[in-house]
Image (cartoon, rainbow, N blue to C red; front, side):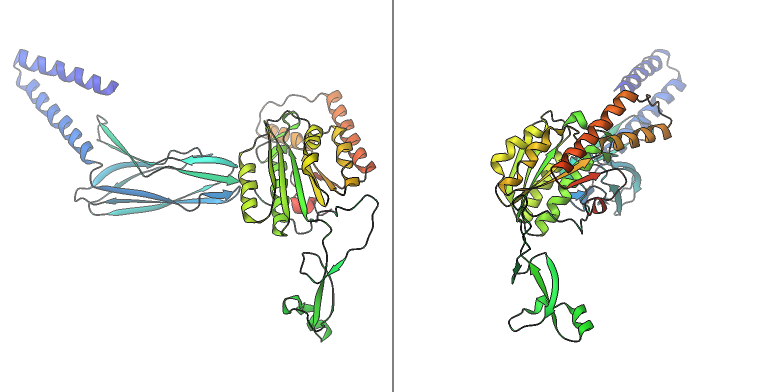
Length: 418
């Protein structure tokens, strides 16, 4: 707008000067200005005429670490070439989407592919395609939006847990041996010679080849059917930055454990203690998996409720035969007693701890490597935190609660295998 006002002022001065003085040179400049400005205006107005454009997104949801591919197509249905076009997609995706400046001839078509990494979980928008053109002198410009915006959901990364097994939800002190079953379960424990009535899908072909006779797999009856995940996102204990943080680590654990359990046809429930407590009742199948991932894609570590209070509020929802999996970065020993109290009720319990001190240390090392100012540590606060951590580990061991510690740089499949 400022440039147009300046152009209008210069034009007005030129007209007044030409007609006042009658100088041929000033009339020459006036005619030249009319030609240039008028031609620029016409060129700009025709710049978007007869254009057809669109874009296609390869997927509307994915996981952290996936690649999103967007295919753009621009077609000129007219005879006149388009000498300068800018094409870009406004988006809330981290890092944005790269635009392109191009020229397209008459009756021509241009297509290109843009790849972007999904580096952060969440709900994002890709707005309608924006096409802009103008004249070589920058006097005028025109723009148009094409298509409709789309929503892209980025789920947390799911890591494989090949050796993870939920502990049996039996009464405390019970050491009964597993019950064999004729049903096919995830717990294949041994092989035996084939007997009449055995199904073909139970045959273990490697053992058959080794023994020279048909061997079939035997399965143990699972001692637990359902899992309830309690995800603690108390902001008082968050540490680290980005993917290397206690928040993202805890969410990855919850997503991976839920995916593993649903893949074993277990019913999975979820309690997320964030800004407000959110509860997903137990259910099976792909629909429940999608609900869990959509919830985990949106949550943030902005809770203020202690994990012990969250456990107490969840007691009414836990039933006999379930296994409670508590995922937290808290070093407060107050949640150990409510967790241990579940076992006499026939509810298994597991604690997955995110080592906040380790994640904070990694963040400090990254800041120091970038040359950023790093405040010195308080030795007294550091020692206090170590004592709280040791007390928590001791309390969990005292109640014989299976405990896993998640630290930066270690795959979850390795951590949860121990």
